[in-house]
Amino acid sequence: MNAVWREIWRNLRRPAAKAPAPRRIALLHRDCGSCNGCEIELRLLASAAHGAAAQGLVFVDTPQHADALLVTGPVSRNSEGALGSAWDAMPDPRRVVALGDCAVDGGVFKGSYAVAGGAGSVVPVDLAIRGCPPSPAQMLEALAAFAKSG
Amino acid sequence: MTLLPALRTAAATPCPPTTRYHLHAEAWREIAAAAGFTCEALWADGGMVVALLQGADGPILCSVAVEQGFYPALSPFHPPAAPFERMVRDVWGYVAVGGTDPRPLLDFGHWPVTAPLGRPSAPYGAPEPPESGLAHKGTLALLRGKSPRAAARFAARVAGEATVAHSIAFARAAEAAGRAMVPSRAEGLRDLMAGIERLAAGLMRLGAIAAAAEAVLLEAACARQREAVSTAAAIAFGHRLMMDAVVPGGVAADIGVPGPEALIRLARDLPRRHLAELAHASLAGRLATLPDAARACEAALGEALTQTEMLVPRLDVLMPGPTLFALEPISGEGLGTAEGPDGSIRHWLRLEDGQIAGAFLCDPGWQRRPAAAAAIAAAEPQDRALIAAALGVAASGMEL
Ligand code: SF4
Image 1 (cartoon, rainbow over the protein chains, first blue to last red):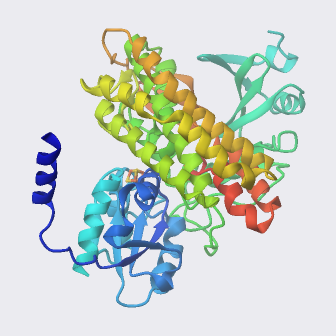
Image 2 (cartoon, chains in turn red, orange):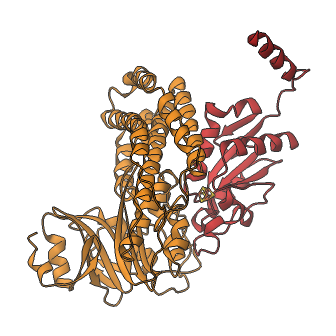
Image 3 (cartoon, chains in turn red, purple):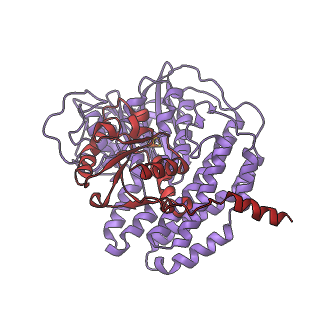
């Protein structure tokens, strides 16, 4: 009996029409002096555990193939140049996501002689995902909505 | 302990749990050349250069005065000292006379100052493309003038993969410097958290090896289990990586009410046998000709299995009682040690009236990164990604 009810419940919750295929977004990640905390969660998002691919998130290695630049870390002065070059090599239209408190505004490292203070000090930021670090679920939600908005 | 003559005649001050010897340049050279010591770390503080030496009787600190910006190098006798000497030059501006490697490590002319912790001045010369130091965030400068409690968040962000272990080493250094006690319940909770972190790190390393070897089933299994570990950690300690959960004097908060049950369930449900079989089945062939990577893989798997088994025993030995003691605002220095996922982490603090006047936070990356770089360079091109994953060391820990 229970099983029958469970089946009915599942059917009720199923979306009526087939959901449209999510829009694909190619993400290029650049670590700009992260403590590695944001990377740990980002790698988990990119792995099979969170179904990022099903939401249209694709990770690429070269700027030429990227729709959006995913920046982690407070943007150390030593990484400013590499971040700028990655951005310059990306084709239009291109967007920037600041991932984690550090990339949003420098986080706890704000004001240090060695950091520029967030992705926005080098490239124009379109989406800020807060958290230290943000969880893979938070990243997924924000990035999936971002992909749709593009 | 039989002390070398150079140490016996030197002025000694306490640096719990060890001693700091203040050496003349001559005695410093004698110690540098003496057998039986290895150099674990080297940094500067208030016109001195300090070396953390590991001897048969445990670690000791030796320091020597910097004369007009110079001090005698350790690197000719202790090759691991070379990257530290490069760092001391970039961050404090002190030059190791006779050092084996004169290249910069962190400062390539992109900071608004040179020698930010020594005598800061405007940079000279044109900036160069940085060969390293991309993760340098100026952490040591940010610690200065803060109380250990206020500065703990920087220690927690030295290396995300070892945030708990770094926080424990930092707390222990502050407690040693401040002659403070820690509640036994907090000690137990620290052990528990450190174990969860090492469990996650073992799965992370195994997953990275699987990804590099294109073992998709194993990679997915590691990711799923790591997600389970992080979820349980968040239930128990309010943060998936347990960042900021350990603070000087104890822990920030007691384990949450549903925490023990979540951890017991994690230990019960983690498929240890399946993971081990899957790891061996999917990697044995690929790693057969790569002994270093195979060893790292076994170590990662072993760590994941052992730390899983330790979860419940660590919960069982938790004592009732308080979880945080106050720290007196006193002066002194101390050394703190914690076992992280990749080896011993050591933090040194010097407090003046309860505020940080000098600090060094030493990650195992200082030892491991040069070794990993050499192994990767020596490997066949098609094996490099795999070796890198197996020996993987993130930059942030050593670049501070
Ligand atoms: S936001 Fe937090 S976790 Fe991410 S890099 Fe910065 S300190 Fe590390």
